[in-house]
Amino acid sequence: STKKQRTLVFSVAGATRRRAAPSRPVRGCHRAFLHHPQACGFVVRRLSLFQTNRRKGPMAMEMRARESVGMSEDLTRAISPYATALHDAFLHSHCSSCFRKLPSQPPYAMSCMLCCSVQYCCSDCLSSDREMHSSSGECCFFADHLKKASPSYITEGTSDVRASLRLLYFLEMHGLVSSDSINRSSRIGGLSTIGIREILEVGGEVAERILKGSMLMSSARKMRTQTSVVFSNGLTIEIVTLWVVMINSVEVQIGDGWDLGIAVYGPSFSWFNHSCFPNASFRFVLAPPNEDSVSDKSEYRAVPASKGVAQDAWHAWQFEEGSAHALGKYGPRVVVRCIKPINKGDEVCITYIDLLQTRVLFSC
Ligand SMILES: C[S@@+](CC[C@H](N)C(=O)[O-])C[C@H]1O[C@@H](n2cnc3c(N)ncnc32)[C@H](O)[C@@H]1O
Image 1 (cartoon, rainbow, N blue to C red):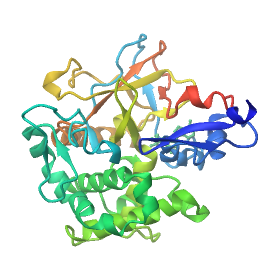
Image 2 (cartoon, rainbow, N blue to C red; image 1 turned 90 degrees about the horizontal axis):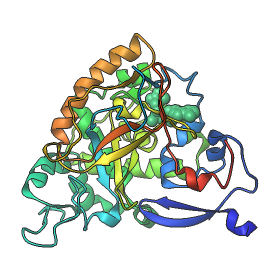
Image 3 (cartoon, helix red, strand yellow; image 1 turned 45 degrees about the vertical axis):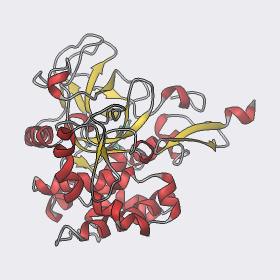
Image 4 (cartoon, protein in one colour; image 1 turned 180 degrees about the vertical axis):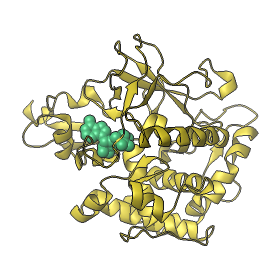
């Protein structure tokens, strides 16, 4: 039974695997992950949690309740993604645009004629995703560059690279990528890039994945873009974007518990911090805006904590999220909901991990 307890079920890119847990239990969620850097795909994506003290980090963001909120009430509207990518295992069963199951009856699914790797449930989804799929380099990635990937990269899944290609295209389209922006604020598109230098310096599995993935990205993007951005610290835009996806993306889960893929949202979702005792949770809405009951007009009831820079940035990102809404019209949207009564001014936290799994291994 000791052996059983020390085995942690984790999932990377939709596959469930088992790895040995650390030799001793650890206290506190952040330390726990430090000892489980490879524990699960989700945790790996949130790894920089543990390189930094968020209270002291440069311009660390957190969300606080603007008013008192009762249990089960929504704190946000349905937020559209900046970028999404299905896990490889679902590319032939789910729509790459809206993430819904592909139809089993006529009219059948449609696929990209060039790479034949992405499928869509209807012509609306196909046309809404066409530009993103092709101009981001994702189509080239499937058609050509994936052949150059190492077998381990393919086995572990390519959704992080594809989400990064898509995110980068979104950010470029909105003029949000410049060496100046990142050098000044350690952010792109409002999203934290904190911890990238440290993770590369330390090396190891995650660093290797970032470096290999960024090379695949550059090679796929070369067909489409003439420009390449290298920051003053020598990091390329592909490296930084891949890292942004790793620490800001969430697994898109549907009712029956499958992790279909990953999504990156703007600040109104990404600025929620993690707690092992969260007062909020989140859910996904797969239906297009006009087909669901969640309003995308309702007010945000959780807003960035600090005044000044955070507030200014917040208003700027609200605008970008309007664009995300137009671009990712059919992508899975996320809604944050209150799960304990929250008082005005309280920090609102979600959990980044599966608390049921990790509770066995450590106490917070
Ligand atoms: C998705 S972002 C959350 C918003 C972030 N605070 C920001 O300034 O953009 C995830 C990052 O926030 C920080 N963070 C979130 N929750 C944390 C926690 N409980 N303890 C320490 N750092 C945390 C980590 O740096 C992590 O990589």
